[in-house]
Figure (cartoon, rainbow, N blue to C red):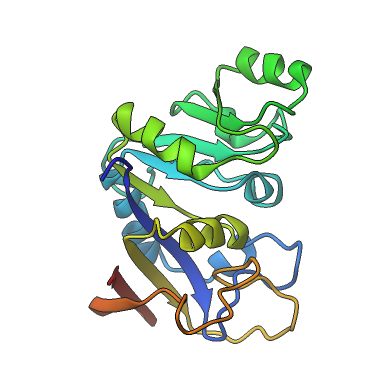
Length: 219
């Protein structure tokens, strides 16, 4: 397998939502999680070589993507962003961990130079859109053997669409949000056919406080 082993990890409400409404930060719902649940999430971060979120997640949530609630090393932060439109004051530019911004040939050169000044590395993986088929083998060759993907819905869809998801680990938030246009775990156009959908087999499940955790393996 000439790519990292990919684990999608996400907090999801009982009705499959990632946020309270479209455009809202997922941190609002994550505030419901207890310290022990956070320790579970950060224990996964500590076991992987790289961690990825999309640039929309960076703009909305401003995550640090570091290990804080358990002992362990910080993974390399990998942010796909076709136009390199990442806020210059984002937490991913902290010195706590290495950051790679993955972009395309159409990204403005001035943004690339500024990102480099902030200490991040820039990789190109496509002309118009970031192509994960090109990116993942490069990450693998650089020593990222296990990759954690923390969303959002568009990034999750790209990995699902390409068949690049090896595991799902879901923290089920014991609440219902509702809303037709609220982002769900996987966005995109959808498979629209039983022949194309991805299948998973449950490998583990347990409860931390009042939060069900399920872990799934691709089949």
